[in-house]
Length: 161
Ligand code: FES
Image (cartoon, rainbow, N blue to C red; front, side, top):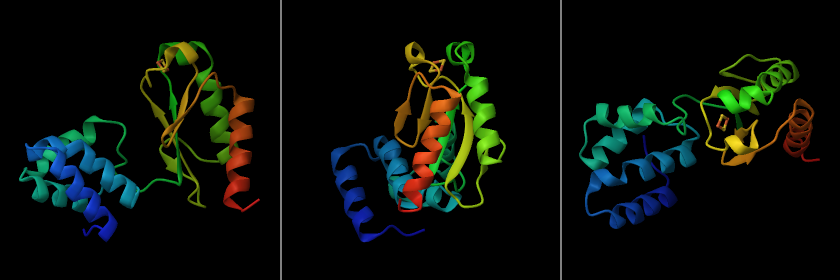
């Protein structure tokens, strides 16, 4: 795996901030994900090489956090929380509605590559349940209707409307 020139500059800036190289592991994994959309096994090996870590140490961290996509995902990663507060406030209805609307199951990506649907653990926004994280944004106090409206908006944006 190779980084773009821009990513190499960011990587150097990140490494300069951490006297202990291994402390740069999370920022580097985020950089890889920004660069490639997911964190591949080859990228984990490269990160391990840059930080003088064993690949398994990188794998352990990358698989611990739900932030990281370990395989290619759609342009928008729809992560719906299904823990207690969100379930009580209707998360299952939202997941069902998204499945129907997108014609995909959980952990699947639409054929056009626009959306990946995932069920996730608590997103730490229980007071505004139900919650869906889409890439870096939170959509709170969601309803199936609001979720469908978001899909319409994102599809239109993808089609340049
Ligand atoms: S239970 Fe859904 S954000 Fe905490």
